[in-house]
Image 1 (cartoon, helix red, strand yellow):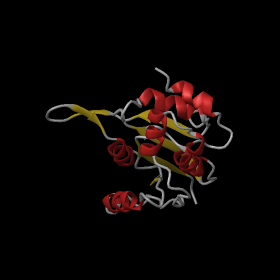
Image 2 (cartoon, one colour):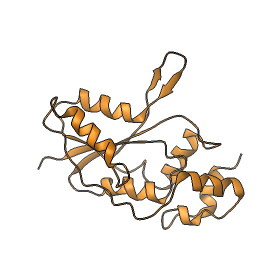
Image 3 (cartoon, helix red, strand yellow):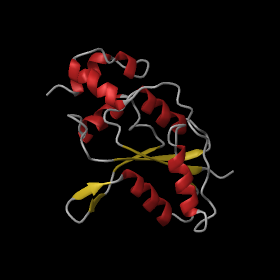
Image 4 (tube, rainbow, N blue to C red):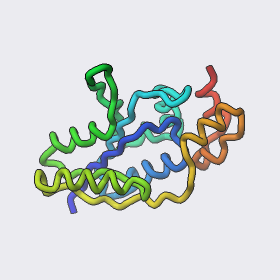
Amino acid sequence: MQKYTVLIAGGFKPPHKGHYDYIKFYLDNPDVKEVRLYIGEKSRDTITLEQTEEVLRLYGLLDHPKMNYKRATIRQGKNRSYTNPLADCYDYAENRVLEPVALGCSTKDVGYRKRFNAYFDDIRSDIVSAPIFEQQDDLSATDFRAALQNGDSIAEFLPDGIDEQSVLALFKA
């Protein structure tokens, strides 16, 4: 099989161990040539895109040789501008006709991939159904944000080997 590019979209505010494992799952897959990660600019509570990028950098994901990170495209709506990382995945797949692509997904995101694959069904034949990442935990960015706001330990949200104090320092005002 020809190597393919995996497209991943999200907010990741902030990125937790589940996000790390999800992205790493595709980075470590030998059939994956490149992972294109699109993240939206919208802040969640007090967590910004810049902080998300710093956490991902601390996790070592943005420096991985297969990673191609992009901030989601700023689009103009009727009343305001916005970003939509998933729309960037569709745009990329529509414009890269000679390159096999797949939408990365976890067990909780299967519906996104079904719609993505169905959209391209009549348009192109090289949409790959990459392996689905089996989500192992119930971690959420919402709970991670709450722990940060409440001053609780965030250790359960962090990948192995990541120092809690290093992450906390990224969220100090």
